Image (cartoon, rainbow, N blue to C red):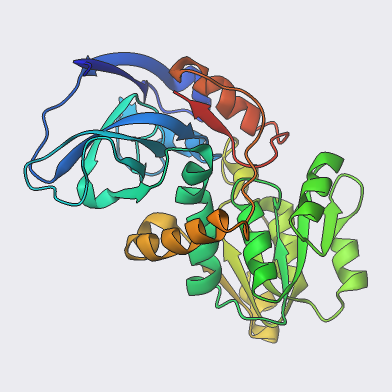
Length: 332
């Protein structure tokens, strides 16, 4: 087993990932009794990586900051008190700063067993769990509703579309090009909307005059405003992110306060941050894996090739071009 490993750290606070990231080498740490050492095989790329380099998840934190989040890998060594994992087991993890490194040490309880350390298993760890937990436990998704998913062909949007459809809902999905439109059709989306060809607000007003019951929203900005206006009576909007403002920072807006739009419809906006729901990970992970293994749930992995820890800045920048289709991963 290696004595040292490489990882990416942020050496300055900025939303420019490439400018912040530096590759360093350090010793593989000794394990505490309840920890496991994992050799990462795949790492997941997320739009919010630029929030990590900007220090937004750790207010007051100063560089260096470890980068990355979810990874799929192989257990290399276990602590003296670990009983449910053994060397050679495949696992997925999601720890802030634990993704963009060749080796990772985590508490054994934070490593979820999977059959193989594949891109598909990796995709489920954050993207799939976000959709499943947010829709069910925070969004109160039922059946027979109209559900709108923004960034629907992205890493987590693809899951939201399929899970909402499986629950018996009419699903609308927004995306930015024809390739993504085709993916949404393959996933069973009832009404894909290419926002570069159609005005989303006009489409929703004309074709869904009664409004949308549930929105899974991760873009922010003007599209967020459009979604709020499109909410039906008792409608719920799940805010899982706001990628449109990650790089430039939060936009200042000058308009009436949000309650003037929510109160007349008894509507609500509900924020969702995955780490707050760790107790639900194992249950939802198990259910999603069963759906994938049975063929009932598709997992789209972007076909762009990124190999080696050195390629991670390229992958992050690619994700932010908006051209990706499905989950972007790096093979370490």
